[in-house]
Image 1 (cartoon, helix red, strand yellow):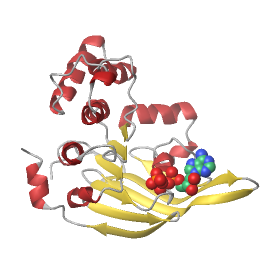
Image 2 (cartoon, protein in one colour):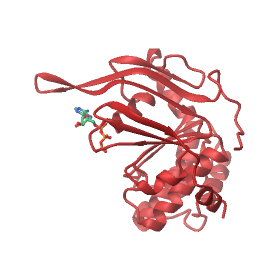
Image 3 (cartoon, helix red, strand yellow):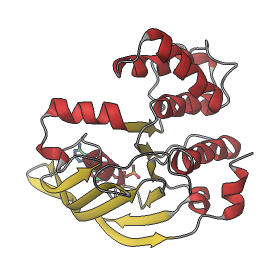
Image 4 (cartoon, protein in one colour):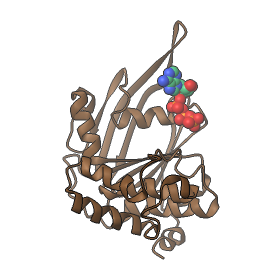
Length: 251
Ligand SMILES: Nc1ncnc2c1ncn2[C@@H]1O[C@H](COP(=O)(O)OP(=O)(O)OP(=O)(O)O)[C@@H](O)[C@H]1O
């Protein structure tokens, strides 16, 4: 496995979380959606989180990435001890600098071209216009969209839109990549392209890729498969990704 990153003070671990509890108010009662979850993820790993609808997968991702504060528990991520102790501004900064996100709905801005979608994030990070354009172009070429740079989302297929979202997430070379159902809106072929890109982010860029999915096709590519049910981790298996599947990602 190729690791190009200098890892933070938690070594191979990009994230270590313990005792996460998240409750939502439902009428007068509280529903516990995360029931004391311990979770970790390593650089270079494609970690899959699977489980039935409503089991807490998206809530877990939100708690790990600083989007939704858990009632209890802590998240150590990269060089940060206890992410949730930071101010909102510092948490936002942490996300901007270190995390990439890919969601099933693509979350693209309708009025921006593919190139502008990716450039915008890079400029937020402080890159100059010239640098942002160069890096965004490379990222889009890497996902096979070099010929679609100036198209707006309405003119792109579902698979192309998802690849723009991936280019946007990967352009900043995130140390942690969160993907929530990234293939669910895609047909077989486009789903496969997306899976290969996630695999490559882990293997070639050393990112900790954390992917929530129902998609069994992804399992062959994962280094680790975690099953969550009713707010608890039921099963956590390390496995060797199918070498044929992984080799195929280099073609
Ligand atoms: N903001 C909220 N307010 C109240 N309840 C919520 C909120 N967000 C999630 N829930 C509830 O928490 C539970 C877990 O939701 P979550 O989205 O984490 O599940 P999931 O495993 O990602 O499901 P799916 O596979 O359907 O996306 C669900 O019962 C959901 O209704």
